[in-house]
Length: 128
Image (cartoon, rainbow, N blue to C red):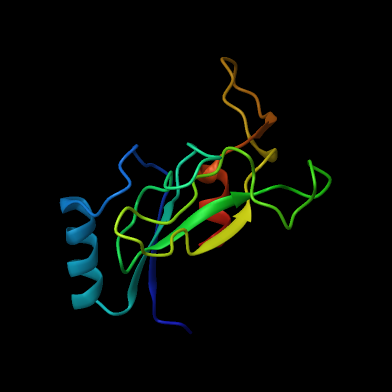
């Protein structure tokens, strides 16, 4: 039993610097050492300094390609946010498949369906 708490958040913004929300996340995780926030790096690549959610204690997740997509799973997806943070810290911390991930699809009927989606929001839950 890990006795840990993990919070997966697949949302972001266009801010690449340490902000009040990041301070709150860091303070909470510092005071609750069994808690980890895992956050998406945003989809504003491919340029540098496009990563968001740059808290010091969060695990920030970029999206890699999926198997058989572009150059393959060992490459960062073209849309994924990239570091470093504006203050020079290395972010994102880890990458996970996030390009063309088969996921649940919303329909207007009461039926189940799937669709391929891409984004760091698809990579983050897989990391958690």
